[in-house]
Image 1 (cartoon, rainbow, N blue to C red):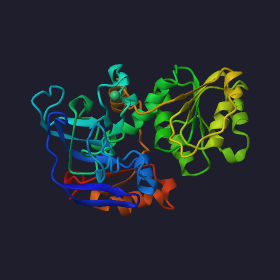
Image 2: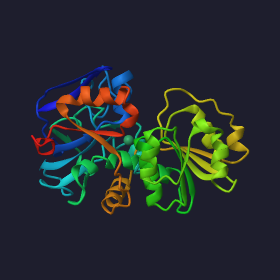
Image 3: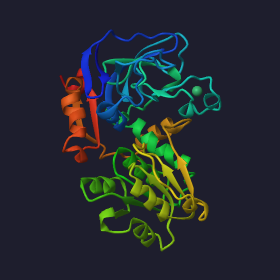
Length: 361
Ligand SMILES: [Zn+2]
C-alpha cells in the first residue's frame, strides 16, 4: 500500500510499503478516508524527531523511524479480530490515536493520555493515517454517525484536544473565557466554549485572516496584541474584573504572561500549546492572587464521543477548519510545504487522502 513515512527532518517520502495486517493487539483494520496534517507533524518535519523514535524502538510499538505519519483520521472498518465487539466491517469510524502501555498507574487510573510511555499512532510506529490502510486497537476506535461526513470526522481528534482543555481547567457554563491563538486548537477551544455555554469568549489574535476564522468560530470579542496591553483589554471586556479562565494556544511567552495577568484573582490559565523554550515566571504572580496554571494534553474518557455528538448536532460546527484537500502523493509539496511556507497563516487544516472515493479519481 501507499504511505507517507518520516525518515528525518525535511525527509518525508511517499512510498510503497507492505499492507498492514491485523494482529492480536492491533485488531481493527481501517480503510482510510481523510487524515489531517497536525502542528506536531510540522514540528517533526521542520526540526524532528520530537515524538518519533529514532534508533531506539518505541517501548510499546517496538518500532523506530522510518514511521508512517498521520494521527487525525477517519475511515471505514474493513476487518476485525475475533475479540472485537464494538465495531464491525462497514462501520464508519475515527480513532483515538493514543499509544499507551496499559500497565502504568496513569493507565490503570483511566488516564491513558498521561501514560508513562505515551506515544501516538502516526508518530510512534506501527502505522498511521497518511496511508491507504491502518490497524489499531479496538478500544480506541469510535463509531461515527452516517450524518457526519468523513472529512469533518477527521477533525474529531484536534477538536477533542480543545474540548479536553475545558475539563482540564474545570470550566463551568456561564464563565467568561479568553482564548489566545486562532489556529486549529484555538478555534477548537472557541467552538467548545460556545457549545458548553461560555458567557463570553474573548480571542487574542493579531490582525490577519485568522481573526475572521475566530469570528466564524464564535469569538465575541477580538483583541489584537499590537493594539496595546492585552490584560487591560481583557479587563475592559469583563467589567474591569478579569476573565474567569484563559486558554494558551500560541506557545508564545508574552502571551502567557498577558493571560495570567488577564484572569481575575482565583482564575485559571490552561496551557494547551507545546513550547519550544522555557518561560520565566514570577511565582508571586501565581501565589498572591491564588491563580491556577494547569496543563492539558490530548483527550481521555468520553471526550471523543462527546465531540462526535456535538459535531453531529451542529453545536460544534467546525465550518471554517478545512482550508485545503490534497492527494497523498502531493502531501509534501501541497501539504507540508504549504503549511510551513509564506501562505501558512491562511491555512487552518489541510486534509490528505489516498482514497479514490474521496479524491474523485
Ligand atoms: Zn501507561
